[in-house]
Image (tube, rainbow, N blue to C red):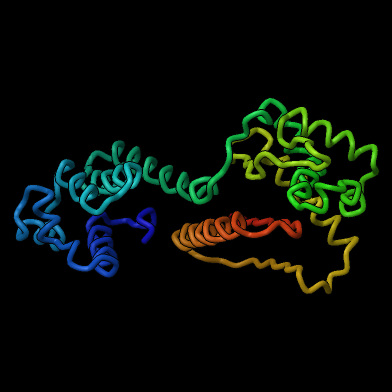
Length: 275
């Protein structure tokens, strides 16, 4: 389960226990959880079914027993504190922390493995605002283009002079290297975090390039897929929807890493609220 969708730490503990029991059987029981917390099973049952609460140390121990990460444990403690707090100002602060933790764990980098920007960091403005640089970078992961990069020109609509300039930049940034008559990509998994100052420009320019490609390409190609929808839903469903998207990205990333590089694809995901 995704604990960041939870509003009640007790319900979350019950759901996590059920999940663990389905996966691991009798290795996880409420009796063993109570023992880990240093309390009686009857008291744990009382907490989970009445208005009583675990203290912070007991909840920490319960989370540790369930093998939660430090961030997940901190989130559970925040839920507990927000349920108990009576000072309105403190409640607001706790809820703000809860919201921030939820949002942080709905970012792309929380779901997929990303490489550090490394040598491209000082040139991020140019790399991430020039889609041609990114496309050439990806095309070079395919052996045919790595051996004969001039083929890339027709695919992305640039001339050979422009291509050579891009290749020189990618080499100078140590993103690719030329050896034995072929270009080698050092690491294709570069990722731009949402807090980057060029993130907005990066997103807009990539989408503009997509529209340009769509305009110049027949729309009846069987390997292309376009989808757009406008809908209304609850705020809670929005978070669940984003988490499912990230789960899909996480699953697909492992398959992409293991997949043979044969073609270049672009995936744009826009999910935002109008009001």
